[in-house]
Length: 163
Image (cartoon, rainbow, N blue to C red; front, side, top):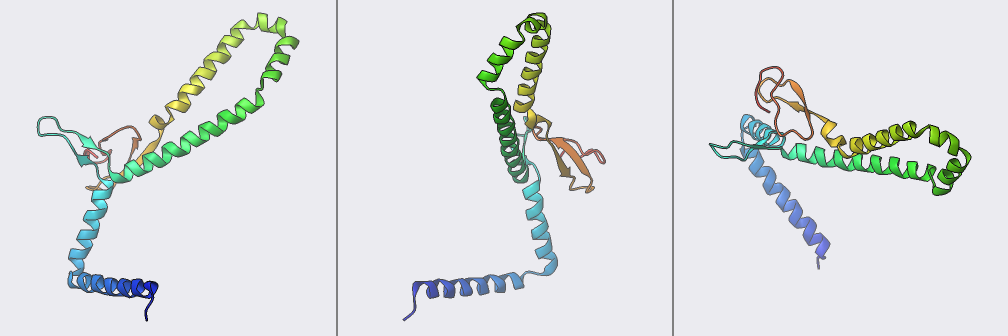
């Protein structure tokens, strides 16, 4: 008597064999073009607009990369902010104010500058994705052009093709 695991293995062997037989019927040059077309579709932008309002959507690959980068940047920002908060506890800040109140009165301008820098740092963390560069390979000339993660399209720097 055969077990379910053996039946599953048997079905997989038959399925793999049928796939291989069908694949062997396809000529090598046709197979290569199918593989290349599939790769090009995965990394190329999609036309989603109309004839009168043309638009492009990012490729599946660029969406995957953008999401991975967004997660990485968010985690780095979160870690950085948590470390900063740990180093700046309320007790430490209160003690610094008590110890240096004269300098604080004199240094109102410095405080303003620090607040400005903190706001800028916050904006940088929030908009860091807009500064991430993604290499895009032109399907026409095979040159690599850098594009921002937030851009849907960019012209090839070599041949001018809209990527």
